[in-house]
Structure formats: structure tokens, C-alpha cells
Image (cartoon, rainbow, N blue to C red; front, side):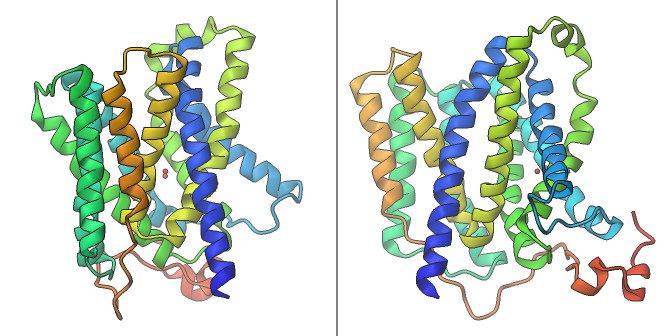
Length: 327
């Protein structure tokens, strides 16, 4: 049983890391072909939702949660947090260079590990794991200061992004632990469909660019949609199997891998010391060990209603909750 669980976790983590690193490179090429980042992101989210629903109708996916008001209410914060993360990410990069932003990003596991302890019922990391988290940050600082200085002109959006990103990691892990779904594909459908709605209204300034896009460029976007669908599935699966801190570290490792690919294919300015820092970060991540669960997880400040099997199948109990109404 333990061996099967370990195999499933390794499969989910490997799939997520492969898709994430590949999608980062794919997005860079897609934006080069179609200078409409909001459209590309919307296409990935909405395209994923359509692909999942179509696969279910064709019998390729056996179990898929129906769209229900109770589950929409639970997953709506996921969509809002996702959009807030994207917005503050963009605004942060207006005030800080990419290398500086990466340093901020690589410090988030330190914060998330404490949130894991406070809200998600895990022990604090061991001494070895704390050293691993610090070494991961040191590697990022070394790379970030190699070719450009630490530059931040406005701390407000960087601080907002940091706070929202950490909340995103903790909240989504809480959703996977407390909200009962028929399958992992249900999480993929809900998060992508709901997040695509606000993004649709952010494409106004890109209409002319979209109209002038060539068929070849749109095909590149379509490829990123396929990658996005796969990454969304593996991301939700990995979230359900590992701690929020470990998932955050995996995301950082994907950034390191994508930077390495980017340096190899496009950017030739990285120094040998910068490359060594990236390899140092990868080595540091390897030595992190996930903190075990305590006996009883602590409650999050904001209560998230669990969706029971009876509610998802339309029982009278569910009807009493239908008065109220993303990724």
C-alpha cells in the first residue's frame, strides 16, 4: 500500500514538474508569436475546461463532477486568488527585475512551511529541511545578483504578491484536503472554468493582436493549451499528495529548470557562477524532507464547507445550501 502511494506521488510530481517547466518555455514562445499574454492565459484556462468536459462526454474520463452552485461557491476563491496572483505578479515585475522577483519567490517556502504548521496540521520542518530551504534561497540570491543588481522600486506590489501567493499555496492545499470531489478532473474543471471568466474581460486591449494572429501562431497557442491541461491535472494531483511547502519547492525547482533551458536556448549572458548557483539550488531542494502531519490539523481562519457525497448527488440536504450562488 505504501509502495503504491509512493509510486502515485512520484508520478504526480514528475508529471507536474515536466509539464510546468515545458509550459514556461512554451508560453515564452507563444507570447513571441502572439503578443497577447492575457489571451494566451485565457485560452489555456478555458481550453482546459472545454477539453475536460469533451473528454468526459466522449467517455475518455469516467468520473467528472457536475457544475453545482455549492462547489462553485467553494472554488470561486481559488479563481479569485489565481487572478490576484497573476495581477500582482505583473505589477511586481514593473517595479522589480526578474532576478529580484525570483529571490522573492524562492523565499516563499520559508513562510509556507510556517503556515503548514499553523493551519494545515503539519510539524515544523526538521533542522535538515530548514537548512535546505535556506540553501535554496541562497542559491537564488547568488543567481539573481550575478548579472543584475537587486532592484525594487516599489515594495507594495511585491509585498502583495508575496502574501497572496502564500495564501494561494495554503488555501488550495486546504481545498484538496476538505472538499470531496468525484475525481481530480473535477478540480481541474472547476478551477480553470471559473478563473477563465474574469480573464475574458482582461483581453480588451489585445483584440487587434488576436485578429492579426497567423494560423501558425494560433497553433502554438493550441499546443500550450494541451500542456496547460496536463499541468493542471498533475498540479492538483500533486497538491493532494504532498504538503503545501513541498509543492511550493517543486514550483521553484521548475523555475530553475526552465531558467536553465532558457539559458541554453536563448540567453547566453549567464555566467558560470550563475549556472553554479542554479545547480546549488537544485541540490538544496533534493535534501528537503516533507514535515509529517500532526494528529489533528488546525482549522483555517476562514471555514470552507466540505462538499459531501450526498450534496453532490442532489439530496434534500444539498438543496438547503443552494441559496448562495476558479485556478
